[in-house]
Image (cartoon, rainbow, N blue to C red; front, side, top):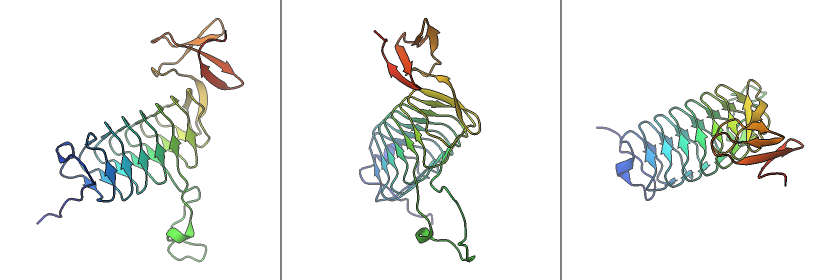
Length: 209
């Protein structure tokens, strides 16, 4: 006989694949869609209209906002905070151990008492590309974009476009996710026409008038 499936409080089971495991202590909004082999641990929160792709792992206590898309096989470790509207690509990993060891200096198996977890924070609207590794503790700013395959070891500014290992800023993006173009000193989104101004490495929306 198969193992009885765990379900989170208030989950609409019509939107959850039968192979998913959701802890009874997790909070998953009824509108969330959860695909096969997903695991949502104790104390985690998943907000409204989220999509968790096949094989996603959400660690205990992780906070996920509304309208977040987490693609297949992504791993989100506690105590990560994912704000509204974030995209996390396939096989991305958000770590929680800055100095990982399986054993103590004496050679005994390390336990939770032997280390302190540190989380990754992904701010509103940001995108994390496929196979990105975010090494805690880092903050990915609002509407930023991390290119596929990057390794993030430093904070990413709002609207920053970063790539590489280690990831470095190579430009700016707007809310539409497109790289901004320079229009006589004002950065402009080629999709929405929205304007942005850069001062001292900080980007703000609106003109410089």
